[in-house]
Length: 362
Image (cartoon, helix red, strand yellow):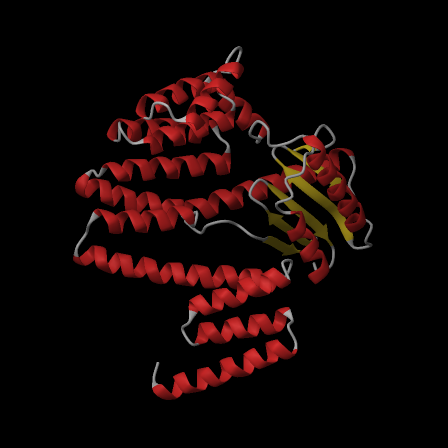
């Protein structure tokens, strides 16, 4: 940036700061963040977004701009790492590159980089990172094939890092989260063999031993997770029931609007539906689930990261879906979505409410 542009950008930043002090609104926080970005100061742009979101946590524009600035900074660092690797490839650079991609949920790109790393020098760290990729895929999709692939990758990582507790702990967490208590107990014993006397591991071993009797096998636990779309312990309790009540109230409110044909909350293999009845409700729920699953899978295959919003428009009107990590809100209406309904949908995503037996199978 030349001197004149730098001078002009400083002036715009000062004016944006004064406007924010005079009127601390989401719009002015966003304007300041944008001016920082234009000046090449992505760290300051992110700080402005974080400050704005602390004051206005539900603001969609600030949240999305924060995500965009983080993504831009991440891509800049990835480009630097690729340049350095082309000049002098070495393990710390590969590790940082792959960790950034995994944390960004860009699993296809991470797996491609890991394949290149392993083809070059078979570094043991690459096997552990590859196991993390497979684990992330499983927890996103909850499928048996992904679960088996994660198991195999973990075993390979443990074989290459026999004295490193990280892959063993990753396997322990994996088995615990799917409810394979007996296998998890055996894994906890292996962890204690690597680090004997660790109080936290001894406590987990005792807890898992108490649950190991009549526990499902690894394959049975995987089957149950795939069937339900849920991990043991994700649902239930007063908090979940309260969330369900708030979701149902919001769905009723949305479905009561004249141009709304259907309002849905989808979680796992079931959905709460307001509007259509009977077979129509079931078809609508299945269609939304199919679109949601296909969009998530396509985003992962293409390395696009997490899906935040899906919108289809046609002669039928508008179908909008706001996916969370494990659930989604959806609205089918004959007119445009509108700001208030968009915010309501985004508010549903991530509630992780229990649908119990009240939902329509999807």
